[in-house]
Length: 401
Image 1 (tube, rainbow, N blue to C red):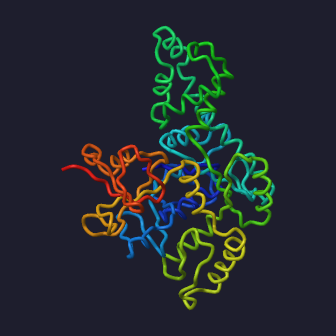
Image 2 (spheres, helix red, strand yellow):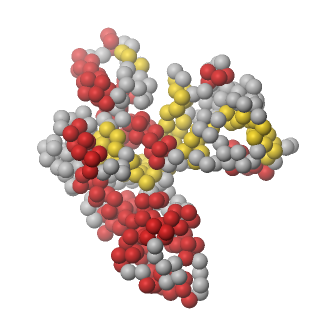
Image 3 (tube, rainbow, N blue to C red):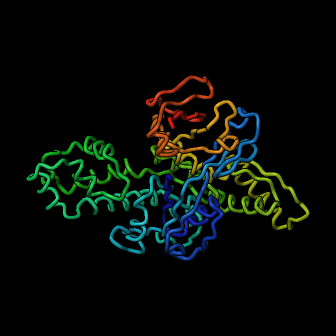
């Protein structure tokens, strides 16, 4: 399963965002380093369910579906907050960075209202520039990569040259455990244009450029501009989007999303994550304070931004940044059911570009070993092993006994 790391400075709302996505019980406060050990949980990406094509309600094995919206699970990791010079061991920096090794993508949570300073301490709104946080976290993770690269570099580079080892393969081993691919290392080498046969001649600047380039290729980020409901935050958001045009920056109110989900969980409102509105179901059960709180969320967040942003940020991390798609395998292509008669029971997240036989292997290894082909629901035509699966495809895998 894909792992999304929730990262950022302490006290900017990381754990609130994590709880809003998962409804897991985590400690939330404005104390420094509330999160020490990483919190693991399951969040959900949202997509339109193809159940209307089956003519009946779907029956998800995992995840859930409501009003035609399918929610597919992904794994989340909320780690200890960063402080400046974390890569040097300050705060909980080294622990934080080590916890992030297996993350495929980072959701970087910032306090876009500027009410948390560089040390994670509460300050007056708009008195701190959140642009500093975008820059500093990029640098911290980049310098972490650099420290891994420079570890035993003199010995490493000499061995590559003297024993004529493959540099790409050697670098893969140097960064083992970080989910870095051969293709990413090759792209980083091409982008930095460094001599592959003479790594011992790389300067300190060369090493830094390569490490930062590799970080950008292998650990991509999306920015969750949290606390957007605080006055002045929207102006900061507009400025950040101009200052960092290469970043995807999503306005968020994690507190609002959490409040809506808790109210929905207790049957007080009907709310589908990612929607621009909610419906009050039991007005008599709401106190005046709760009613006013919901109206503030409606006025300051939903009506202004179209959603709380929390569902948007996890969706964009998966679909836009990682470029994953959702494919639906079935056992009966006519009824869109599995062998037990359940309608569209599975929705699998796979990287864009996945071939059909690779997709079969993700369902079960036996399917790949005995693979014959597949049948596409829309066209009813037979598909071969090299067919590239598309987002929303419904496919029956054919395999021998």
